[in-house]
Image (cartoon, rainbow, N blue to C red; front, side, top):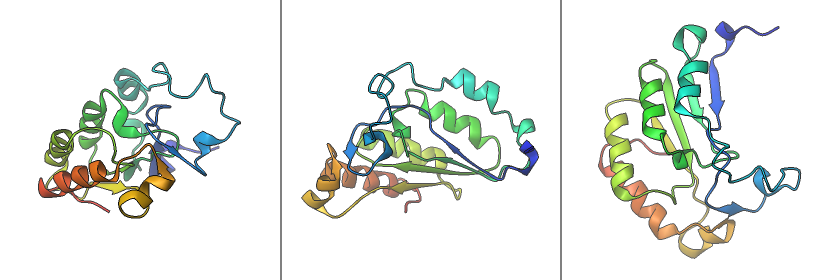
Length: 159
């Protein structure tokens, strides 16, 4: 049996929503029922996060990754509040994103929250200009570029 004090790293999928379609993504696999994906009720609420993720229950945790394997984590309507919750834990926070959602102002605000820390954002960019949009269908490379530049210029750390 596993014990929560042995868990060092945690991946969290906050929603079932993603704003783009990528070939090869598990979201595109037919095993996921169409009625499950992209529904608002498939969101982990801030209340649930606070209830299920209490620091005292995860004493060995050193990093939290909002991984974006099934979802686009930044689409969560209470994303900033969730980040604030984990910022109190003194753990490394990573956010994996396709970067094509939200505004430059939003990304600047996120950078302000994460500034002067090791926390970072992993931007999923495949190719340049229109070639990125071949794999990341529904994305806009120019918007992604504006977003990651806004984040970086505001002091955010990017990969």
